[in-house]
Length: 250
Image (cartoon, rainbow, N blue to C red; front, side, top):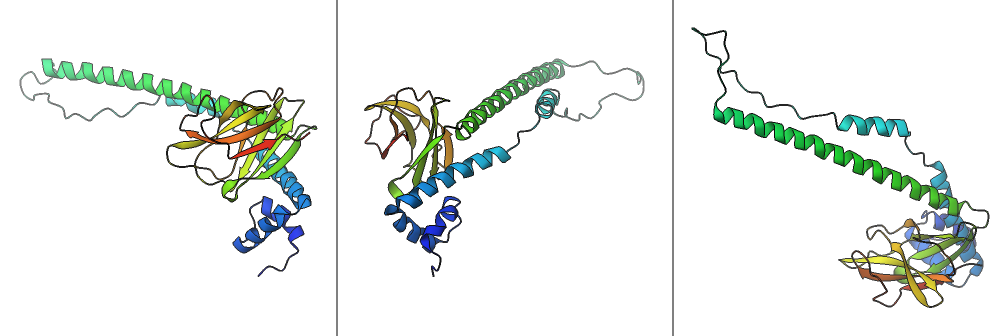
C-alpha cells in the first residue's frame, strides 16, 4: 500500500530503494511530472559522483609489490623418490639415463615458459589497472565539473538513462538504470549525434542493468547521443533503429 506523496519518492527511486509497487506507481507519475524527472536526474548524477568520491584505489606500491612477486613464484617441483643404490658404490649418484635427461630438459622448458607467462600476465594486469584508473579519473572529472549539466529520459523496457555533459571537459557520461539485457550475441552501443550523423561512443556491458559509462571521444559539436542494439563487438555505424536519442542539456 502506497501512503507517501509520490513527489517525495524521487530520491529513493534514484537509489533503487522503492518496493515494486511504489516503483511502478512512481514511474507512472514520473511520465507526467517534469519536476520529479529533473529531481531524479540530479539525484542519479549525484549518487554516481558520491560513489566515485568514496572509492579509494589501492596504493600503487601495494599493487606493484603484488605484481612483482607474481613473477617470482614458481610451482612446486615434483617429488621424485631417490634411486641411489646401496652397497658397493653407495656414495655415488646413478648417472642420468637418456630418458631422465630428456625429462629434466622438458621440465626446464616448462618452468621457463611458466615464468614468462606469469610475467606477461602481470604486465597485462598492470596495464589493465592503469587504464581502469585513468577511466575512473576522467569519469569523475566530468561528473564533478562545475558546468556539468544533466538530462534524463525513459528508455524502452522501463529503464531510464541520464546523460551528464561538461563543456569545459568536452566530455559526456551516460548513467543507466533498469535496462533490460540485450538479446544473446548483442550489445548496447552508444553514439554521439552529430546533427543527424552518428559517431561511435563505445559499448555498454550487456550484463549490467545499471552502469555509468564515459562516452568515448570528445563531445565536439554533438547535439545529443543515441543507443542502438548491435552485434557483439559493436559496429562502425548503426545497423538498427536507435532505442533512444537524447538531446544534450544546454
